[in-house]
Image (cartoon, helix red, strand yellow):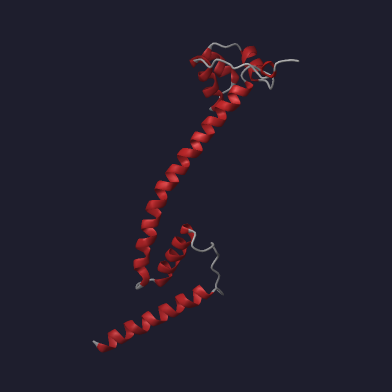
Length: 150
């Protein structure tokens, strides 16, 4: 019976030169350009990157690692941006007196992001529209009374 390890592809030693080839391929460069930059012949590049080629699996792993890193960095940037977005939304709540609609939208957004209620579209027939209109009407009445009282 054959040893199971002999069926697995042999590990390729990844030199700086091979990493340069992988990086160039990841960046979408043509084999002709990669050949000029690294000194590998076109025939070698085509042969090694074929499905059964020597670099096929190591390149797939290299690409996956880079993609994972890109996703990790993007998530970290979004997390940092989320803090600023939350601060802005909290500040928007202060518009409750001058523009209740902005404050209502900010409150909805904060609750949605915090997972305290499911995200929902607000339509004209939605109750939140009625609440916003009522708030505007009350504020206008209050401002009118203040104006008349002066």
